[in-house]
Image (cartoon, rainbow, N blue to C red):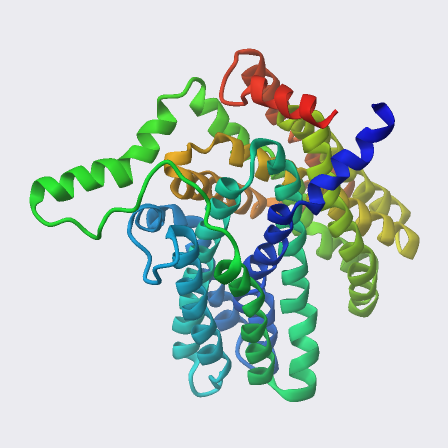
Length: 436
């Protein structure tokens, strides 16, 4: 039996439903950089001021606020009648393709305000797509498939980001920015095919027949669709501690990641050297890390995987210390990039599986949007102080600090698990037992 277990565990990635998550992860990650670094590169080549380029960062707000409209997607009937999740997913993706094409047709020198509005629309539709994809994944997969599913969605997401980053820049250099954005819009068809031909998840609730009429009907709908997910979450034991854990789990990685590029530049690496190392080692490490994180989650269970991946994630920041001490050395740079992407992707996959495990079947979209938004807000708010801390502490002490800052979150996770909180020890053990 022991000899048969490794292929059995790995076969989780070959299940048809798990494999459907990879193209959906790709579709989820593709639009992000089109309103972030790729858009910034376009504006910079058009000689737009740095202040104006910086102001475009606000278009990413929908990703942190998506939980506000997730109840509508969770409960209202979809515009396309092919199932609640597939119908909403396909409708949003069609609108997203149109918005990406419209953004690509703009001229920064003459339509800067319009570009800002369209970029905000792309981000809003992309965040809305994420709501559907996350709910679809959680509802489609069984409990023991959530680990491989998390690995698949993380891997697809990172590939989508790479294509929308390096791929779009290459196309823009050869054929112009509209061709680049049009190509990205065309690649959204990969995700559309899943919603067109894939299965509709079986859920415990049905969509309501539209927005209700009358005060009492509206009040009941609001109580069920909007307040219900939050009330359901807050009825569970230790829920405040769980929110704090999700907020803090990836803070150290995020703070280190924000200052990684300034460290490399300060040491004297050229942008070409950083790009070459990142594309080669970073991409491979990210894919391996995402799949490994899903495998470890399936093998050990969610809680143990979070602990293991969290420790590895923190230890990975020590390579920045090696880089800071060792100076301009391409081997150290390769180690840094590999460790950052490998451990970060592993921890990300484990966290995705954990958040998925917390969601009630009746409120999947809203609760997942809320919890994932909390993780994003935590990383953004705290990591933004990384520059000031690095300036005050120096490189070595700063990266040592990022190595230990996640330890309280790991201790909190152990405390939650031992008290039978929302970490669901029984489920974690059941997944581990099923895997081996």
